[in-house]
Image 1 (spheres, one colour):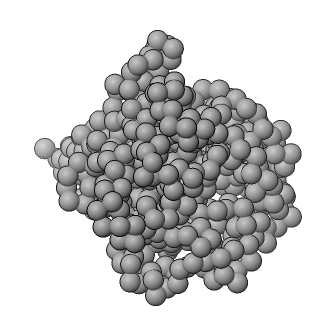
Image 2: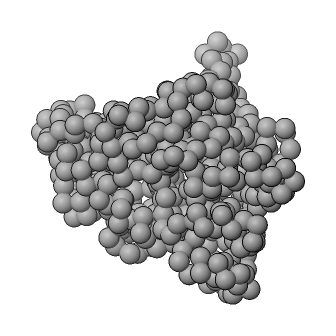
Length: 455
């Protein structure tokens, strides 16, 4: 056999090894109501079938290598500790529910009234998915009255900040992608960046929303130098795909409790109409600075959720690289960046009233727009990360300092969540232990790249 033939054979074998690892690691979960709906079954006929959120936590392990406990059992454990040792010795998450529990347990006014009256047999409580119903029943217990009193109506917002590699993405995967669907039957919209798809732990439960008619390529890039970069299909990693034509169109296609990874539309269809701001695809630009960044689709999705009323079910929107999306001192440039950024907190306020929550991830808080900082309520400070100063405009009171962080938060998978004077240490397991593949999954838009190269 010639050397070149042998080399090709070895290359093919290594490529197959990458695909085999992906298929073993990311076997899709197909039995939930959401999975069966996107496979073509009628939503109404799937009533009674369990949701992804009722199962997803079972696919992960805690830091002791045991199965991840249902959240309602963790809540009951908090109550038992307080009853046994007194409130002064209870976990801060339980003592100060405004700091954390209010951010991740979502209830509306009708549910609050039923819970305050102890009417857990009412349909609005009894008909909830089991994992959510158990949490609501816990809230209604007299010993947890202080937690129920802390619950607010509408969506919430959490802003996690740190330098790279300290746990922001794992926080978003576990708290946003596992716990919030479990607790609230939350719909998740993870707004993707092309260079690295950060939601891989959730991929077996996720539908990728692909912009209609756009040519794209997907690559698996193993870290092992002996393995090649391989072109793959999205469904080699994710459960399935769907298409959308505009942000509003996608809102008509998602379902309660679904987890969606949203690829940005490089043509920005429907974005200008929603935001009244400029969006210029690469193919329509005359100069490089005219090309709108792909991340700007997030403004249009937020606006659609705020004004269109197509989908009002509790929804979490995950925004990565947030300081790039809403920079400090945004420019009045060809892409109307200033207009988009200044409108963000206005749209967020409207969307929160319609059950939209956000989870924003950034390296810095100080390098983001003051109005956006002012609108955000919960902040999550990762290990080895100094909290922002209270003198930072728009930030309000900061109840922790670096001394507290160094004492209480000392490893990845821990953080302090805080809001005004309330704060609590939290922790979560490593979601990446679920798979052996080490590397990145990225996406390319060849036509966009060609247009950019031609400028």
